[in-house]
Image 1 (cartoon, one colour):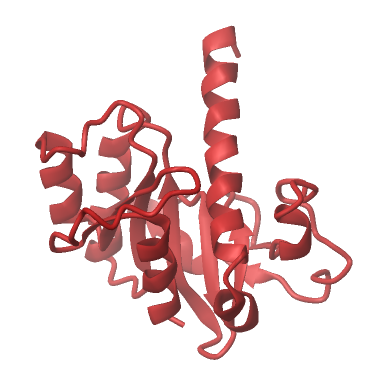
Image 2: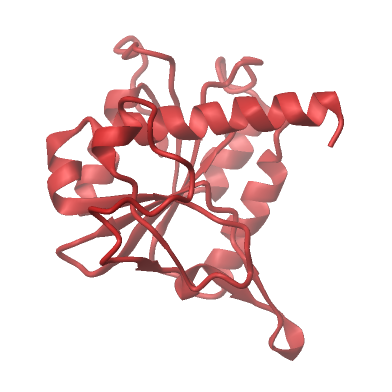
Length: 199
């Protein structure tokens, strides 16, 4: 991996942890859901929930099973897209939200620092999710550092048309000046409210 790829990977990982922290801070989500980091390993059958007490202190290691959550894992078969000859690929999944009440995955988050980071790939996975009748919500979350969604531009139209929801977030800010536009939202508070509505 070259220096640029390492930087992109590190920044992407930062935003995944940031969004996990946003979700973990909400008491309703902590009570009613399990949040997990996703995986791209085709061999894995499940993922371990995040220990929210550690992610808020930046102590949770990615993909690590905490002692508290070792007794439960989230099955990820539902995230597999089936191709010809029974070949499968996992849908892009940076974060996973599992509802304790419903006993299933209710939301998968694709978290990207910028739209240049595979926005088209995320839209492709959404298309495959629809084709195969997956009933979890698939949402796109980004800080939109390159300002490609605000104001209304090409990627906003594409993603808002294809995804179940699109969220632009900024560190420690709510963006009350922006009204929801279809399934396009601005602000961490909107993301938290959306996830809670699925539980």
